[in-house]
Image 1 (tube, helix red, strand yellow):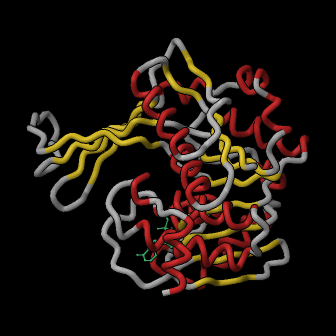
Image 2 (cartoon, helix red, strand yellow):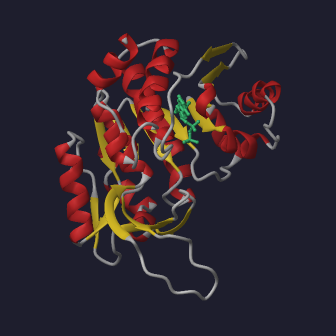
Length: 303
Ligand code: ADP
């Protein structure tokens, strides 16, 4: 069982000809709503790709919240630990996309920011049903830090996808079993500019030196790289595809990697599976609707 602690959002995607300039009012060409939030995206990715995910997060008492729950249930994600916050609305993201695909995003965290220590303690029974806990940084950082320590104490393995990138207390890194970063996050957290390939391994070793047991870096069309506590490196090349929209490629990769790894797959095979899932995701527009199912990935790898 993988406990996914994180955000649930309703995304509103507003398609425009050109992004509005300061003070400008423009008319939308299209407005569509999609279920999102990194927490819920990754929980759905795990469930679609063969794992068992328990979503642990908060929603408002509103239509968006009910829609998100319905979606998660339909995907086979366990929802009984999702709390309803009466004093906030469900988290939402407003995404403007212009004809070139350039976007600007404004997020209202809403109920996601009421994931506090009090609520975690109320629901602490959840930590005894999970073997792994996956976290992102779309809930308060104080809660992220609290949960890392709690999992460590309860013997639950900790997987962190530090997105959107932020710092945590230095002494918490040694409580992380797997840290999954993209190039931006790797660069920020290592304090190194990861511009050329030779620096990627160096930057990963900086994170290993902080005490993380294993680091996995996703490198977009270059695939992914793994480094363990002894600095042993494994590289898995990406699958060659024409990318249309890279939204949720990272969430898909993370979910796929964990679903495969938790079932007992070795990490190298799990990275290949995750690269394949990521390659499928970039060929479809959108976030949750671009996350493939287990059978799609198996078929893609066999082709
Ligand atoms: P993020 O979206 O978090 O920045 P990446 O861009 O590194 O993450 O993508 C995550 C994974 O998705 C990559 O490790 C790779 O496996 C796959 N992927 C992303 N872009 C491409 C691409 N253009 N071609 C093939 N695979 C891709």
